[in-house]
Length: 315
Image (cartoon, rainbow, N blue to C red; front, side, top):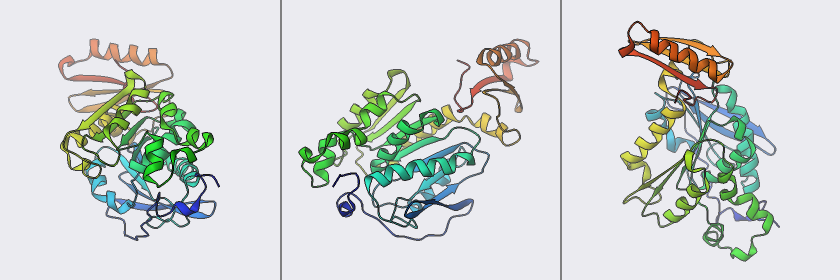
């Protein structure tokens, strides 16, 4: 039986936590029906904000990220999904179901936001994120990998399997490096320097596979596998990355006027904002340049260009 479909790996690969918890204020619980299961997704934040879809680590549930969401919802919506058997999700997990379910959840939550989502995965959650890079790259704004793996032999040994038992097809499906090499959007990789479960070298390897122009690797000194979120540098890196993909000034305009054109120029003069949407990048940049040159108050005038993924394009 393939490693991808074996249910007997529950206990060595998966550690389901069937925990129920009420959503906090300003959050809502959604359920996505898939073959053989119903998946729980908790969405935090206002619907007009850009979206981050988060895949948590093993032995975690959506409720473990209620506090994290409280710090991010000033910038984005945060949607956290439970795998089969975790939280309020039903069914039994396998690696193949993990990947298939990630696509189903992504397709279900993507319409909740006005821009392409950022996808983020921690530890085990890095695997479905790289699968989404392969399957939904045209609809992503960015990728964040926290404490993810890239050494398949080490992955197998941690699961009590001999690396030689992994078939070529299994390696092709699981290996993040080819997916990282083809990733068309910016990638942020975060990892504790003292991680004894998944060594920092695995983060270096996956970051190195990404395009040099669009990758950022943040190594956190003195941090292991489960305490990286306690580091202010983790928060600084994540918040900066999200602001570059989903700028607060753009997000504020989406509340009043959803983006329907490929490009938007957001003009802000002394705190007063307006927008101009265009079909081409050249037209957007030309409009922004005119605003900067002819503005009534050039010292206090911003004219920023964004694309439909939420990325800055005025540079």
